[in-house]
Length: 379
Figure 1 (cartoon, helix red, strand yellow):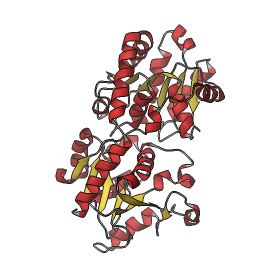
Figure 2 (spheres, one colour; figure 1 turned 120 degrees about the vertical axis):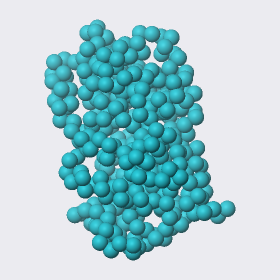
Figure 3 (cartoon, one colour; figure 1 turned 90 degrees about the vertical axis):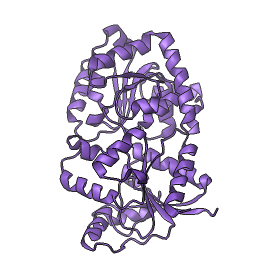
Figure 4 (cartoon, one colour; figure 1 turned 30 degrees about the vertical axis):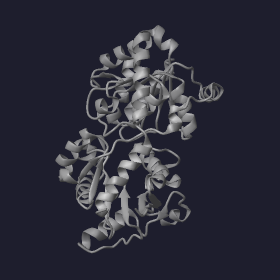
């Protein structure tokens, strides 16, 4: 079968736009960019110019610049209905970031979750109603939709009104480099450069309400003083929407002498792997996830994981993590202590996590994604 000429949205991984920070969509897009060529695709990335700063696109490196900013193209699609305005020189286009416009070729869209529609209070209120209407409308343009978990399918049907027959579940993965044990000297050097002491509690993710970091902080501060003196709380992630109160609480705790470290400028992936490797417990009691890539990364890195018993996370962990009620600060704190003090439970979680991580590969994700392309192309 001939290779598929694929257009892939790369706006989320454009260095000039994300300043080196990759969120979950960025990690997903980067992995597809890397793995899809070996799965039978000739991949060309495309990035949307920044509204109000089109000259920036002349220095794009992840993908070719689109002709117009996404907002402008969306407006054109609305005004001039049923006419194609964005002609793409590809067989099929894969929108990984909700930016879906008319393209004159089959479109596959990965819809990671329904958070803006289900929990608008967790998102920026600026034009939220309009943005949600546009996002729901745009989703209807996709010929095929990829969901990252079975849990997400129900959400997409309910909130995007998508026909279930157009949805395929393709789980995320974890790179082979995560399964390799990094050199101890390299890990020690990275930890020293950030003032980290091995064995800390670790969270990785954007600081925003659904990530539940305030409860992580409260649970940590509720641990026995001796345990807090022994183990830092390390929070890796850039500030997101509505995190001002969290940042204030963190700063207050740090000023009071608590061993809390916030790494908001960690952009090198090898350093991130080192930070995982130095952790004692991975703490990820998120309130809502369409998948939860950091859990898979922690499994691969050989860290015992504490996560939520809700949304997609039990589906991702498959029993390899200690699952708790994410709305209970005491449950989070109790689980943190258990994974420190119960060596048998730690060993069990680490072994189960390794097995689960081995099942979640980006190569598998790419192969299953190409099968969705074939379906959209009628191959």
